[in-house]
Each structure stands twice: as C-alpha cells, then as structure tokens.
Image (cartoon, rainbow, N blue to C red; front, side, top):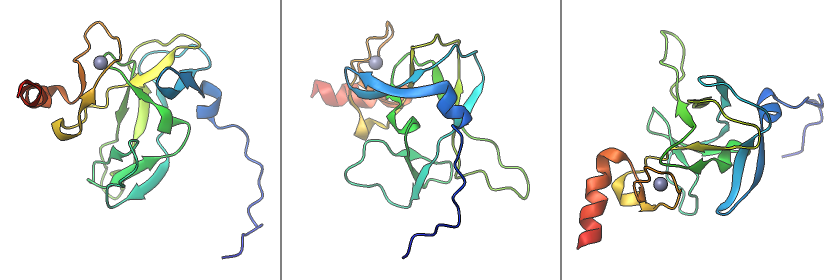
Length: 158
Ligand SMILES: [Zn+2]
C-alpha cells in the first residue's frame, strides 16, 4: 500500500509526552515522571493495537474490559510492575451510545515526584505469575493478582 502524504501535520508533543518519559531501569525500560504529578489525575490513554488473541512473544499485553487484548505502544508500553504502585489503569463505564470498552487509561493514585518511576500493579492471573523483585515493603513475592496469590503459593510448595 503506498504511503499517504496527505496527513502531514507535524504533531506537537502530546500532553502525555510532556508529563512522562521512557528511561532505563534495572529491569529494562520504564516510564518516569518529567514533573511533579498530583494524585488522582488522568495521565492519558493507553494507546496501542487491539488484538483478538494473546501474542506468543509479548509480555506487555493488557486485558480490555471487552476481553480483547491491547498491545500498548510506547511510552506506556514500558510501565513496570510494583506491589505498591503509584498509578493504576482504569476504564470509563460506557454510557449509552458510546463504546468505551476497548480503551484503557492511566491515572495517578498518589503524588509522584519528578524523576520518580511510574508503576502499576500488573495483577496477573496465577497461571501467568512470575517472581516479583519490586522491592516494595509489602511485596507479595509474585507478580500476581492478590486474589489468586494463594494458587501460586500452593504451586510453589509442591
Ligand atoms: Zn513485588
């Protein structure tokens, strides 16, 4: 398919790009605050590609309210996990006539200082859990949904 040159509008940095940047962490790339962020503000939508099936080779996919999957694009693709997160993903309840179920958004849950890494709780199901080294005081030991943690701990004992 030939590339279209019709849409040549040079886009200014998005609001999200003015708030966060991608940087290096000890577990690969991460997302960091460029400036002080207040608690309970919406940082932006998690943009990406919507997939019907789980890709074999991605550890970034997020489940949508519709049960389809979102392969997030940068920068929010690089959000790392913490058992004591400072951000969370949410979606808007669909209003009549609007379809919001395939969109996810990121919001802060407490104030974040400039240079601090933005972290979310992946809450993976037990069958996807991996050991967690987030270093939080309340670290659960596994990147896992708290409601399914007992399943992982049972497996680990066997
Ligand atoms: Zn942890």
